[in-house]
Image (cartoon, rainbow, N blue to C red; front, side):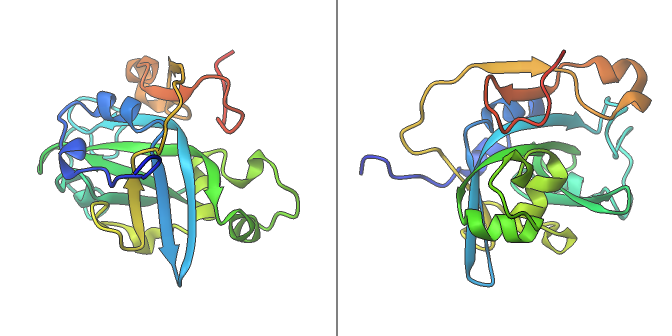
Length: 205
């Protein structure tokens, strides 16, 4: 059927190159169905993180803790953590089991359930404040830490789909945001965004 979306297969998440996965997640659709309410958006901004050799990672260097154990699951699970004690940030675990790689979903372009997204964000006007930036994105979709360790390969509460009738877009790669503590690793060009998309949280200067 023309325009039919397809579930992203498990093998997509098992790719051992987390940077490649971060690039390829652009344009995919992230959907939640919570209490019967469906909300979804097109992924327009991502960041890759590798626990083996990346000082920006919570799991560096291969550090297994109560917080990071989710990152050691096989690809295709969710990793949701609390940032600054306030914000739930949504990540996609990638690669084989035992390798703590993940992709942070930084921004989405709303598709379905926009009114519900606005209500969750306590907004009365339609704007990029709905889901631009990782904290806003999670809140708009209703994602909390209770959604940690969920499988993304079944249509249950959280899942990801291929984009129907995708239009070509240009990808811009740049450095990640807020990881200055990672020193030289902060310079890695592991943030990916759809060029000229208004929902991207920040463009490089």
